[in-house]
Length: 154
Image: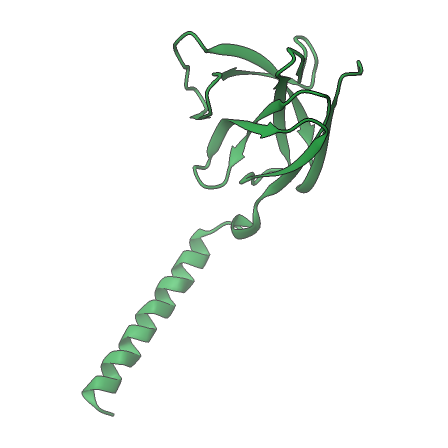
């Protein structure tokens, strides 16, 4: 065996060891831990949606928004959630909002701002566009979930 082949064999061995080490550190499902939410806008106005979920990458609860959905359209939104539950809130350009209601068992109170945002648990935004909303908690079962937004009362 030459010195050159011995060095390349050693490099491959180190790379393989690093790969195995990284696999051990990862939790099952980390590579595929996403939930796809199909938001169906059945209104004549644009809607904006935000979500709260346990994020795979940061390993913390985050709240993130806003995804825009055009009138009478649907949009798939993927979130890096590693748990089969999330919470959502939406509002329309026509003044309507959807989500949880104060006092409901499936409601979760969260801070949001009107600009696009991503915040970790415990962060309290400041400024004129800050507000608290009640998000609706849903168990998605992982994989895929649909949210239908309409002008009709639930």
